[in-house]
Image (cartoon, rainbow, N blue to C red; front, side):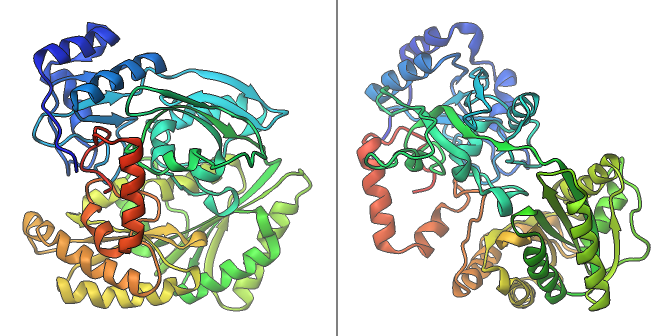
Length: 475
């Protein structure tokens, strides 16, 4: 990696002048929200946090930083889970926060697209689409605070990937500022464009290491006319797989979500999170939250769901279920799923894995991973949930009940290496949707081939020869 320089006082002054002193944060207290990620795993330092208000200001910042060979860390809503958005502890990197790039430039329902700037929160993107009578289906637990630029930079997934794809599949075009300050205007709202390399895919998922996304053309979908939502209790993962396969047969692309969670996870949410209420009598080892959508308000979504549940009971796959009878009940069922990450804090320290394996192998993975975890730390407790329909398992492992939290977390690398070895052996991925950042940088080098890593480095060197963009992240 090229050697970078610490910023001089003169450079900091010049960069601050670009955005205006009001938007250049030098005070430690004012900087604090930008220097710590929400799980308190990474704590960084920076001489200044810059909050530009236009792509021209972003370009001017990068031009000066590139000339001075000073590192820039792009940051959206600071909701990332692998430390990609946090500067290192040296204090030599400048944070560039995109929150003021917050305009919805255009919504074209007829054309099935909208143009938004990088700092618009995901919730506001969804609302702008909804207000226009359309749907932007990317949906995450952090959607009220995460920003679309960060979603694209990390190629976010979420709960509706099964039907609509991840962030990459929902993007038609980008506006990107390159490391040297040039602006690439790729804001093309075209469904078909086969004129050379599809450059946008270089930047989606690159975590700000190749360029800074400042705006995007997003793909809109028709709003469902009706939805049916159900929470289903099952005795084992094989039953979940069977219900999933039958649901796809019955609902096809109308199966818009198929989430799974452990009984312990649901119990933890019910015990610790406010605003939730008991939904099913008794308890079960596993639960599925599934949703079927229809473009026509003819009762077909409800009918399909009822048929699936009836068959699941007849085949003794399901042991209990509740079918939402109103929007309020549907929202409550989704809250149970969305509160899982927050609720997990109440069971102690957690070593987290965002992995994917082929859907049919999820039961085998969970069984084998339990043995791996026990071998690394006897008594450690897998806290499992995720997007069953696309093979994405959030395999988080909580500390043994009697173990000191710090002692347990010191086993992070040992535990992750063991789990990732298993994932790789099963043909899976060590990062399904959260990215690489600084947390998995060494793991990426371990599990990807030399040829793949060489290609990544060539691309990085071509677009960012001085290595100023998010240094030390990804590769």
